[in-house]
Length: 225
Image 1 (spheres, rainbow, N blue to C red):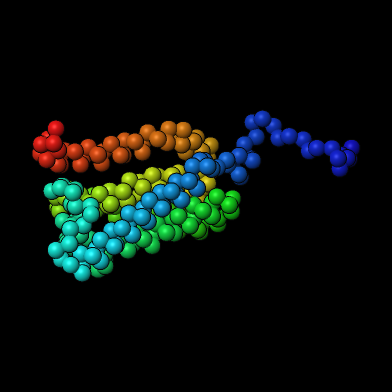
Image 2 (spheres, rainbow, N blue to C red):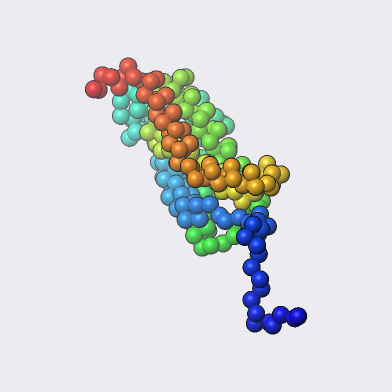
């Protein structure tokens, strides 16, 4: 019997997951635009301020940066090291460019625009580079230079959640090669389970960095108590 054009199509069986496999629900649809926009702006502001301070220091070697507060929180001590120019130019220039792009992507997401897979893969490569570089700088600051840059720590603080949530998004949307290869219900459940407790790994990550800072400079912090 031929179905009338006005008659709705039959709904798929309850156990049919084909539609879910083709178009999984997006994770954090409201969080990601806000995170990329506000996190990008915070990172850009910190990197731009560091750039201004670096220029002032180059003009006047006796200049004391505004973020040099004490023997531990001392931007000046960090700026004058080779690690502050890891690629032959001041590191903040990377932040100015990178966080400007992140902010722009966040604004685009607010419009509801759909971005192609290659774009998300490019963003993933950027955040992986950023988070690896940040942790290299954390190690250098704590165990080689022996000083902390407050503006740098702002960059650390925003880079970690940006990496985490972009990665979760790309895993859930199967943009990453590993996720595309594992189109199984089990893989979907793992991603959804991690997403359900998404704040736990991020909180532990922050606590690990804070603990490392506290332990490394405890001899100084203890004098302030």
